[in-house]
Image (cartoon, rainbow, N blue to C red; front, side, top):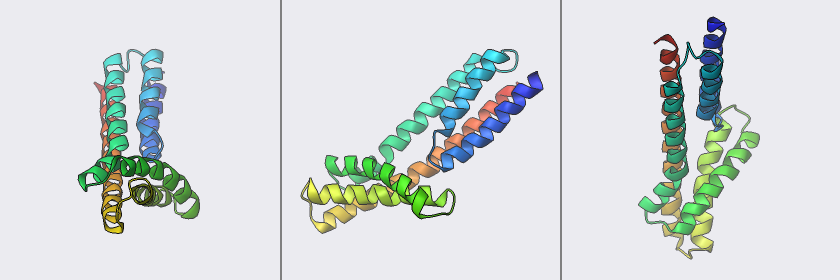
Length: 169
């Protein structure tokens, strides 16, 4: 039974990393499976490890949520541009997944382009910024989104490594 539970956790960790590439909640998936494993086989995985997984998930979400908005703000954008980048990220990731038929690439590129586009549109229309100011802000949104993808992937890999190591300790 322990081998089955351990195998499920390792497979869930690998799937969680792939999910993050598709901008899906892969770390939360890993945390959820770790909860089930801790409940099912407490001799294999302790609840402290589950709490650490939840912390990984919370940190990843926080970084993802604020990264493109922070990029907007860092380059002088407005609150409207920051909100636009968040909305644009969601719309862009969904559209990119359908428009660019290369797995993972469409979602990531769509999210980055969407963040930039959302920031630009909101800077021009709501904040009444100039073309140059809006372009600068949208560049910050794109950079922030790109950084968030890399950081979240790194956190997913770290979370998978941690939970896999926790199985053997």
